[in-house]
Length: 306
Image (cartoon, rainbow, N blue to C red; front, side, top):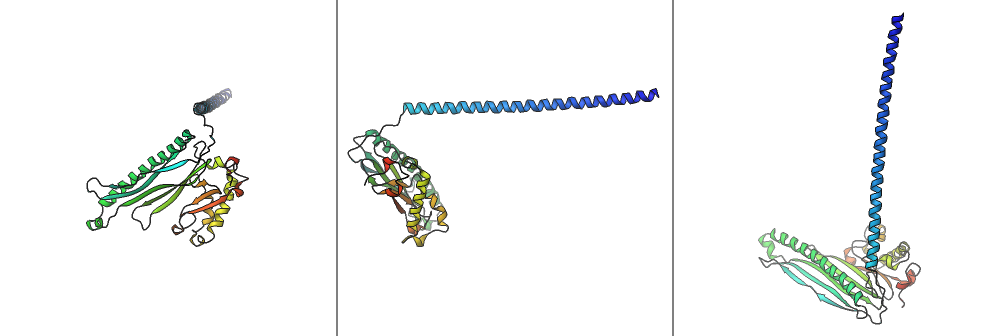
């Protein structure tokens, strides 16, 4: 009887040891998990602190940059800016064969504002940058033309006339307050018709700043709705209504972007390029939105007096 009790007691002891071992193991795992969680939280906190420091550093750098290069105050002009154009048109030929690869039609504006040379310099720098960007496109089209020409048969080469690229500016409005330019561009690579598009650039003549939609509108979203109404009215009338693209209404909000608007003496002009709402045959459409329609959403300084 005693022996039996001894066996039971040993068995209970072994079970107790097993329970204690499992308990200890559970505690270890719990400790490890907590340590890992704390480490992860510490790491996350360190990353957040680093991000905060970098953000703070960036903010300070931006503030310092604003202090070092403050936006110049506008100069009230008494004379309208003068604009001339530098012609960069050329024919690009293959150095070895002399064959024409690309016909380039290009010019670039040069603005003169004697009463505010700093503003004129800022505007001219913007167009110089555009000219530099154009050279990249010209180089790409030249390489493409050369590659295509080399793959032609001898008979096909006799019909070759080269590719074409164009970027030409014209002044559409100039006053002592606003200078608006339009750039008409095309790219032809042997297709039935060239790919054409028009861009616009609107400058504050008193500061030389290239104006954005946020610069001229108090409420950009509300202004967009007003512009959309005028676009719809224009394109659903003659001569554009027969050239509307499928599901054109859903793309009306996409028309007004930063590089397709300018101001003149009557209002805001929005450029609608082909294939956005209408077919190629409809051409470039310009929609004029009167200042009267925009008076509640437009900043006072850009509501030009007629």
